[in-house]
Amino acid sequence: MRREPSAASGGAGGPAAMEPAQAADGRMLETARLLLRPMRAADAADLLRVFADPEVMAAFGGDPFDRPRMERWVRRNLDHQARHGYGLFSVVLKANGLLIGDCGLERMEIGAAVEVELGYDLRGDYWRRGLATEAATAVRDYAFRELRLPRLISLIRHGNRASQRVAEKLGMRLTADITRHGQGYRLYTCSPGEVASARPG
Image 1 (cartoon, rainbow, N blue to C red):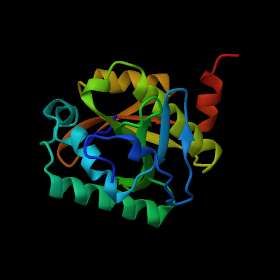
Image 2 (cartoon, rainbow, N blue to C red; image 1 turned 135 degrees about the horizontal axis):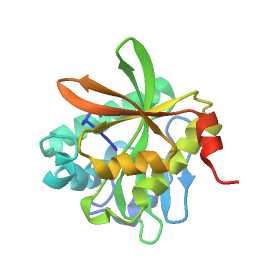
Image 3 (cartoon, one colour; image 1 turned 60 degrees about the horizontal axis):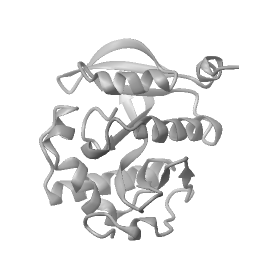
Image 4 (spheres, rainbow, N blue to C red; image 1 turned 30 degrees about the vertical axis):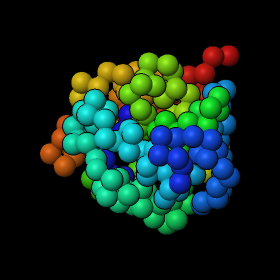
């Protein structure tokens, strides 16, 4: 669902990724299979496994990252987190401590409006397991219940049906087609009330 690249574990991602971390409010989110903890600078090595993968980068039309670009991307997200009190979580598999991507929130301007986007990036070898939906659902609930945000958006590149399906599972609805930085996106949105009404029961 991440649309554009904005924004020390042991290189390949090992148990070190499970060490406690404090950033912003230090919040960690837990799901059945995942631990979402605040991102830290040392995560760059593991995140490069995501952002250096041409298949992953093709999902939002970007070129694969090298290590310096990855470190700049992480630093930008850490600065965002410090400034706004929320940002990206590193996504860690509980079963083995492997860091497999990121999921979180980014404040951005869309036209004249200030919005908060929910996005994620996962390693290609962990696609099609429901992990993106699992992580994004936890972040959505955190955004609405804890941060009390009134609305979330997701910008999804045209043709990215997998991310569109995740957005729909989160209770988001397609509200517009927009162009940003010369690239066309589908704009999905949701509010707490829309999510509550979409839940069964």
